[in-house]
Amino acid sequence: MLNLRSAIVIAVFAASASGAFAHGAGDEGWHHHTAKLYDARGRLVGTVVDAPMQASSSDLVSEGGVIMNVKGAAVFVGFTRLKTPDGAQSANAWMWSGARPAYSGTGCTGTPYVWIALGPLRPAVIERKGGKAVLYVAKDQPSQYESIGSQARSVGCEDFRGESHLVWPIGDSLTLSDEFPEPLTVGH
Image 1 (cartoon, rainbow, N blue to C red):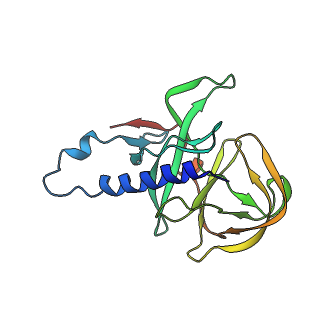
Image 2: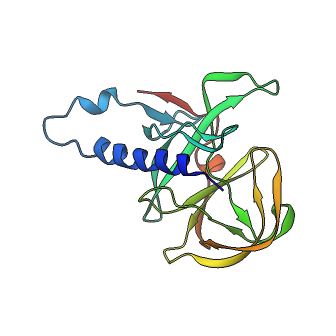
């Protein structure tokens, strides 16, 4: 699960995001200089929020993100640089990436759960299977104890011994790769 350092980074992101949306009268030109995220069709996804997040020192989960409204819930949705098979990183091509789901079964099978809350927004995770990226948004209810058999990692899946953890059941989902196809780009 994410470490304390990551939680602090997300808290800082939440504070900076609130300031980014607080501009009002007299700031008409401000939005023209704000970085925006676009999908592969050139369609605007949202305003970029700089919020790098790491699951461990070697596992960068996202390098930034956007705040989306998913059926009335404000959700942070992360992205990271596209990489080639040899590890080279793109300068401005991005893919959906974020905290990954926990599952009821081993081998990342069974019921997916949201296991982490990132700041004041609705908890959410991103499941990646091949080129498909699905955003899972927590139900609007308190977390509950469930038996967790595995969790998705950057490379593969980590199995657990069916330990009980506080998680949120999935309330809604959005197939990001269909709604906002990759590669994503950042521009003005």
